[in-house]
Length: 401
Image (tube, rainbow, N blue to C red; front, side):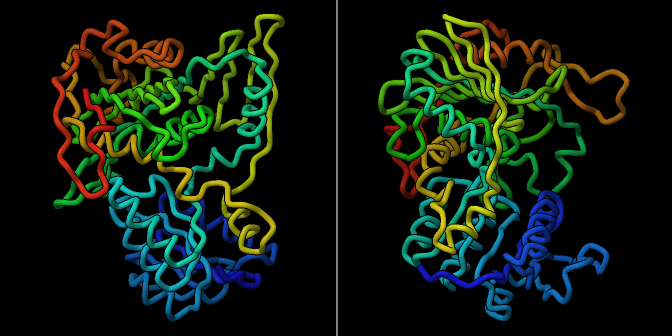
């Protein structure tokens, strides 16, 4: 891998929506003299106002052509999920390093195609799970190693968010499992609350694909969309532990998502968006601390300068992609009966709320149980469906229920 000089010439693919955050982050690095925005890949060019302060920037809807014409050393990809793999391969083939938004791909086969292309090219690729840049992650791992909470018995995660009808109209692919024959898999656990899954797996020490023994899924939807909005998964790890993640976009009172590490002598709760950690121990009251965070683009730049290891290379997201694959192969989400949800009163957005879901999500993280095991009358277990074989799939390691 070559180490380009700074300021690194950067192309941003997808500069609107979530991409605006990347645009502002590149602006920050440009002011520090570490990066220089040389290209924007968008279907519709950004305005002078949107690019204020950047100077001349090439714009094109042709990503590969833009990389060639600008001589970019680094690309940030924040485009629709189904486009991730092709764009990442285009970059790798040109020796361009990557920050690739999560989820890195809509299927395990596409993930492997991307990861193999990056490895073959010898380029650096950072996957955009920003929560994994939190300094709380190594701090919690140290607490676990020191047996502060005894033996780890499992990891749970809970995410109760709210999204209205406009959320599913924000883009043609939003709320889809498939679109025009291509996998999208835009579900609650694979996109908006994907960080809950990835962070729980990281704290369980289950980050690579071989660390996953089986994945059990329960997918539901209250909204009139194709994808799931209220779901849970349980991951059986290769070392015999259990990771359960429960999430919804139909919360009664939206709150901060969190991960709980359960131990024989206590627990550690991590609110990953706040970098806040609370330790409960049998011998003393709760202790709380806040931590800093390393920006993933900063880390990538430091890595290219030879000063840091990548925090989230593709190999460290293989376990997450096993979860994505299990959700992709699972039966389509079960539509919740009308009595299970209601429209939020006093709102004109058409936001649907599932009765009692906040408590159910929290209970799943606390007990490591699935919705069907926790007494939800609508969570009747669907009959198992044999996964359809796909490239690089290992059906014996994927369980749908």
